[in-house]
Amino acid sequence: MKLTAALLLAPLALVAAAPKPSTHVSYDGYKAYRIATGQDAASIKSKLAKFAAVQFNNFDFNPNQELDVAIAPTEIPAFEALGLKADVVSQDLGAEIAQEGSLGSYEKVSAQAVPSLSWFNTYHAYNDHITFFNDLQAAYPQNSETFTIGRSVQGRNIFGIHLWGSSGKGSKPAVYFHGTVHAREWITTKVVEYIAYQLLVGYSNDTVVTAILNNYDFYILPVVNPDGFVYSQTTDRLWRKNRQTRSISSCVGTDINRNWPYKWELPGGASTNPCSQTYKGLAAGDTPEIRALVNLTQTLANGRGIKLYIDWHSYGQYILLPYGYNCQVRAANHARQTSLASSVAAAIRRPYGSRFTYGPSCSTLYATTGSSTDYVTDVARSELAWTVELRPTSSSGNGFVLPASQILPSSIEQWEGMKYLFATM
Image 1 (tube, one colour):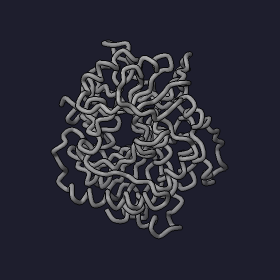
Image 2 (cartoon, rainbow, N blue to C red; image 1 turned 30 degrees about the vertical axis):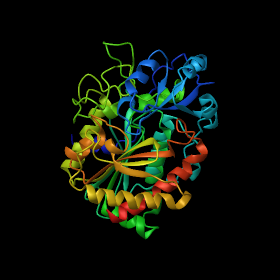
Image 3 (cartoon, rainbow, N blue to C red; image 1 turned 90 degrees about the vertical axis):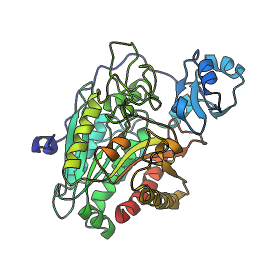
């Protein structure tokens, strides 16, 4: 696929949303637990099968031997009667969701005016994100353009912004970021938007930022799972997957970070159960969202190449390096990536003291197959390909939803880490 003028230059259009579902999922009274699975994961999995638990990490392949689950209030006594080694990490998920705050409103700014930083004070609806990017680009038309790479299952645009420096667009290696692969991870949307904002506002005003944009072309996509994102805002705050239906099951959705066409076929890092949070799909790349991302990835790889790719997620505070599909395999430049990750973690820590763990994805967190960073490393040949898991740590509360008051601090600390990385990679 070529990034044609029609693809890149057309303003981001607002796509009519799918009909609003009639039932809103309430998490009032749900308790969240962290279960120490130890060496008895199979037995615990069997015990949990009777509960309608919301699962938050990859059950079978977590080297930390922990599982985070949310349990409905009516099932809490039966769950606690199991006597599992479990810590309560949220007394009431519904209350945490309420603390997150309502979606903010966004009014278009006047022509060529820079949007206000107040954008980062609240979370926003999908169409507002399109408007924000259109407004941001309109303020800097000489070195930015909006684009779409395709559409989701329900026909929503997968949109982004392309930024460049003095050499003109498409003349430098790519830095390629995207967020909201998993619908409930709203903080990722805001963090990648903050990075785009700082790059544009700082260009010609900050020597460090100017040098960064003169050295790289940036492609930043804040919401690559728009249907799931909208569903998480209108119906089920903790929805993770896309909204693709399958004839083989009444369960909805595919985990699009288990659907990339590389190492997809391997067992152990995804699920073949359509009801699972990590369902991989029926075939590699059989989701429209991943087809669009693969096309963009190959376009960038075949152009000036990809210098840096980051797939932004939450939560846990990790910088994850290749690979996810095998805990023993390391990237050819593993030592270099580890050194950079260590320094980026130190830069992130400076503003607020947040500590990020870094290391290979599989051995540091858990196994993943059909994942983005493995594809971008081995197929697209990106020099650096990371997953960043944002605030908070897995040992603190508010992991499932992050209050809006933490949007700016989370964004600021990541910007510090990225400025260091852009200048030294």
